[in-house]
Image 1 (cartoon, one colour):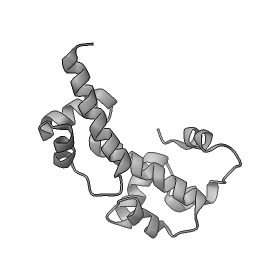
Image 2 (cartoon, rainbow, N blue to C red):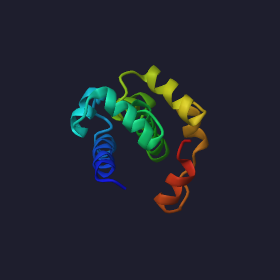
Image 3 (cartoon, rainbow, N blue to C red):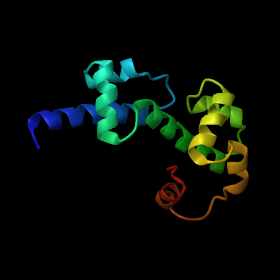
Length: 129
């Protein structure tokens, strides 16, 4: 692997780590491109080539994964959870959740039963595709 490829991968990982850590904050492509120290257009192309999905879709999926955990493990309202994980409106949250998971947040909550298994197994089994 060339030095340039390693440098590009590090920059993309830095941006992805920022999304993983700060998923609830408003993050957009220009802000993430600044973290990666590249132009927004180059960042979007390179991120997709590196990770197989756009930065926006990756961030949505991370937010939905966190929401899935909160829906399983708490009795907080769907609206509260949608705002906590970084969505601007409950409608957008519900639509995105349904697109990624295949069911509404309320239906997911009813169907999800917290089993006494390690968290790593639960995350692997319930990770959206």
